[in-house]
Length: 199
Length: 184
Image (cartoon, rainbow over all chains, first blue to last red; front, side, top):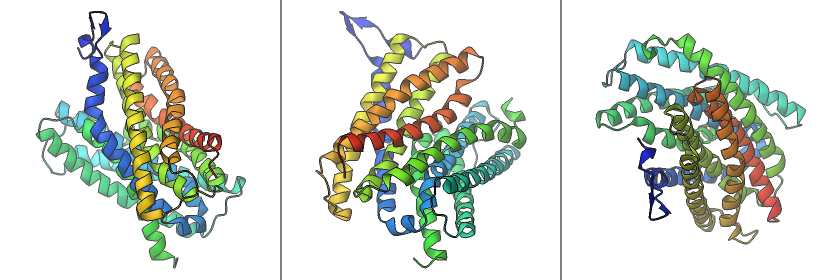
């Protein structure tokens, strides 16, 4: 089907699959990667906070990928439910949606507990200074919970609207949320540190 | 089947994959905290790292998903794989160049740090992403193949594991690139 369009013309290879991938991906990939630069600008402008709490830098890649992975699971699950008809394409609370919400909320909290334990353990082993651990743990939990609720609502509504227009929510929402999570996670952490600590 | 999914099943299937992902990313964080922070040009380097990590999610993730799908629908062959790899490298090059150009712009407008030749802001993402993909593409293809051969759904297994591998090698390759280029 998709790849059967590839054939040789006059000895030259027609790269139809290559062209299809490139055409469908280039715009969203460029936009998402440039959004990634805004995350970099944010970190670069928050050097004082990062050097005061070096443990943040240690757990940041994991936190970004945690919220990104859970959001990806959510979008692909919502998309499957919409395609097989177990979720109605209406913006309303259903039992299916509640199961996904609680299941993913518990998963993200368990993963966060594992991440914090591992991060602090390895921080001790590698001699990374751990300043005010209780405050940092509270900030990480609040950040993840707020982001999870925000992502859940945004992705649910986004999936329904994209699906209603006859498009596949996977193609648009998955590249977008990776960069959005990478930007919002450090933003929320930095905002909370500024609120709770006088830096 | 999807309709019978409970929250218990979601936790059981997603949590172990997340654990693998967390361990790999924690290692990436350690390298970031111990090695990259010590550079004089840290302010400029930290600008590029999140964009490179996003690139992993935006380019390597779909490559893995396409390979998994090709295995599942029986369309995987040398030609489809070659075109998939070619598209992945081409997209990466375009995006790495865009990251470089925008980094120069952000530095010019906001950071204003001219500690090394500004052209390196284009060379660093290009070299480090090519190095990362050189490791990531064979790894994810082999993992996809092994998962498929063992009767597992590659979609469920390969992506979380590759998130960890990709993030870890993105930071390692970035570090090697700045060392090779003599960035202060």
